[in-house]
Image (cartoon, helix red, strand yellow):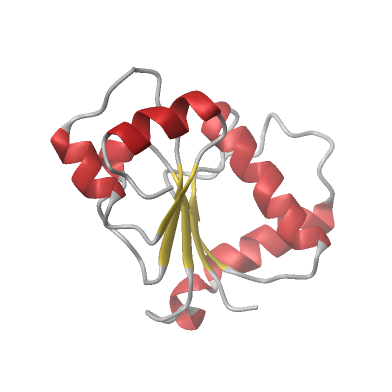
Length: 133
């Protein structure tokens, strides 16, 4: 499967989710082009295997040689930082902590083909703002 993936790899909340997503891709034998957001930091993940670490390193280091603009693109990030994209079609996993979003956030979200959310609350906030989830 060809896939471009842009995620933070670190011990903070989004980074923890990113490690789990990339680890699942690793277990399934999928080798995406990985574009890390910020410097990768696996120091808090003492139970991940060396094979996974090597896979992740290869996915990051080979990303610019391998990616294509027409490969599906998945990003896990904050709405306001999600306006840049590596390729299309594009998919975003994000979170919201407020009961409404701005016009700018709505515009950014609507530039994606699909938005993934983790709660009915977020889905309701986005649907009210005419975001396609």
